[in-house]
Image 1 (cartoon, rainbow, N blue to C red):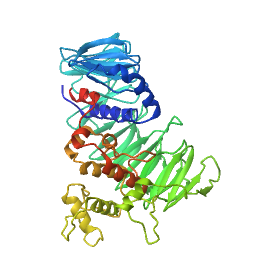
Image 2: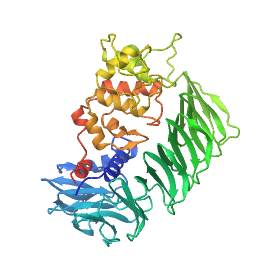
Image 3: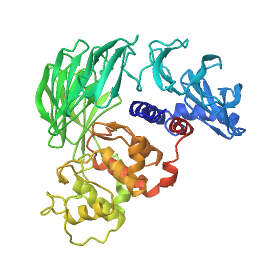
Image 4: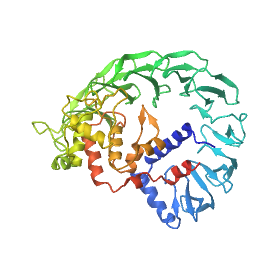
Length: 505
């Protein structure tokens, strides 16, 4: 059975989510780890220790089994693989067949499949046998005839689709064809609407094929609103962003520099000229885009501009923005980088910790950090010949740390995102692009490497948007962690037992 993209992304995202449940990630997890660690000493290896799990996979003499939170053996080690996903456990037996157990070791589905999802979603799982794929319920009943290609499901498990060549076929749960061959891109975004595409342009339709958003955008993303039943669509065209409500009506203007999720149930983050603001779901500007830093912390909105912090409450109308006293706030990481000459302030010694950093400024920090011997040179980038950071950019490109854009530009004065900072820093540590492309999902048009940054111990503590502009404060934290991490590329790329289990399919 071949590996396919939707399964790789599912597994990678589960591992990324599991990173937030890792023993190093919080007090609750630390308590769980401490309580179960004494029971793990006798085993050769073990899987993710997650406080929401009631069973844990353990390994002895090359075989995997299960124990409970008190260390009691549920299933003696006997399987080639055991993947715990909440209260469902996928197993691989000695005959290389997949099945499922429940959390107390009862057999849900006998091992008879050549492929099986890592767990059930909405009570269903995609499985494969005899060179075909179908869907089973938690009693093991096959819901539809075998299909010729891997099935990917929608968020509710009501519709499934597969792709042959460059055309998509959509099925209901019984295997009836809903439509086929009309689109070369298809994503089951919600039960009521799907993202479709033809010739690299995307739009949104409902399951009755009625157009909600025309097919004229490079990418369309649904932002879920966890405080309401609906969300909003984000459409991307020529590098600019716009919001649409769930019915396809525009929210405010089109042309923001970037997008992000809801900060609360009613406000959307906007970005213009590298600065953040807020807009409500009716398109009204709530906070003008003037701030280099914006984050929800302890139920308050924290804004940053230069070396000044502000606080606001979204519950107040109109919103009042009050400057915070930052005299007692210290950045150990920033001070350390200043002592090394990596981070510098302006003429008034203002480090501007809450301002965003351009791509050129970050490359300059790398040059100081790595002590590059920078000399004048020529570049293939079309937009840096007269730029002050030209030689730093050329050197970073020669070191294999960064790439330009498809149009031949580098865009030195664009803000750099946290995810881009992670990616470049991982390259400094020796992690290859080939490995990243193999195991990491693509989110918002780029490989999401937060999990690898976490593994490398370079991801900072605190709240930040991975795909938004990085502030000087957070870049200082990343570079400080880079200088002090004990992780090598080999250790970073060594998968956990769960990831190894999946990649072994």
